[in-house]
Length: 129
Image (cartoon, rainbow, N blue to C red; front, top):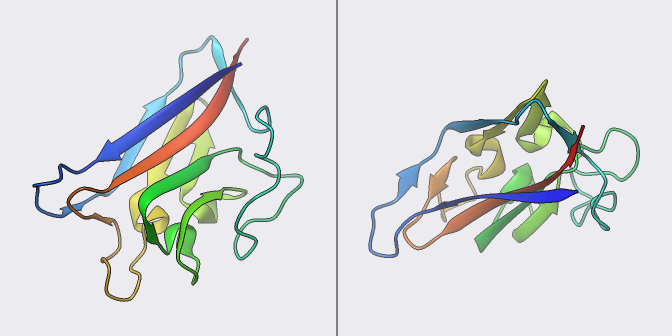
């Protein structure tokens, strides 16, 4: 099992950046493992995420508290369970939609915006086939 981390950062002295989507295609020898790490089947944000079957096995963290994952409460991390959380895997392609991962949150930022000095990180696991 290998844990992957994709971090998108905006320089501390930079201007805000509006993110759209990124896609990372896994090598054919790797398989996404949705539940290999302890805790990935128990989401930290029950407002949009539920434990159990269908868990996509992605963790999202942000350096600043935001309404990440499309939830009303300010949070800095959550686990995904369905594509409505902003992450999806189709075949070997993992796609992150930042307007969903970092939605408008009432003044802090508009959808997909990463302010100066902020980082958003996507964490997932793979196994060798």
